[in-house]
Image (tube, helix red, strand yellow):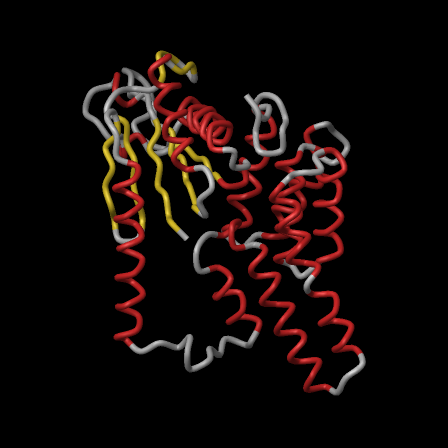
Length: 298
């Protein structure tokens, strides 16, 4: 099986784990920590993987370091010339060049306008990193926390936006419903549970579980989505009753890898974690050998 970059197979689990840890830090606003984690792998084969470089590029872009972001995406294109994520990132960054050059030769007012334009472009580059609404929030912070009258919507406008998000979530839920899945809508998010356990033991998928993930991944391809994969584990006698587990985390990693391969989306499109044992979707252990997806449409 090939991903969108034409690379055979799935990403190694060390890549999956590194990207997941760094992405959690980035989404929490710990950009320096995320970048440090990704840079530490630079001397290894993991550090040169396209998913690691893609996330590095997005973090650099969010920090305003467009040259470093471009270098990471260029490194991807050196090995994978048709990689759509890298090409799209470079295309967006490329738009900042003329604006920045123009700003350097104009008055201070023009410089301010150019800076705002660059901020908007960079925010657009990292929207897939932080999920829906990030670009708007980052632009607001760059402007000193002051929103324009159009963005500072009235309560009525806010309700309309909430309703639009709910409609998008409902439409996505309808598209994702299929035998073997339990799909529910919570505000602007869609939650997907599987009616049967996906794993036989440890992080080993059953044939039916692998098929379920492949079918769902195919549905997710080509969309602008933020996907969080929560791994679950059956509670056994003597095991902790809360706090998550390594087995649950590995299940989330394996499921995300399968979804990435089936959808053609990079692993940077997925966040993975271990769910707390108290959040298990079912009362019986067999069905809790599974994952739960929380999906936010853009």
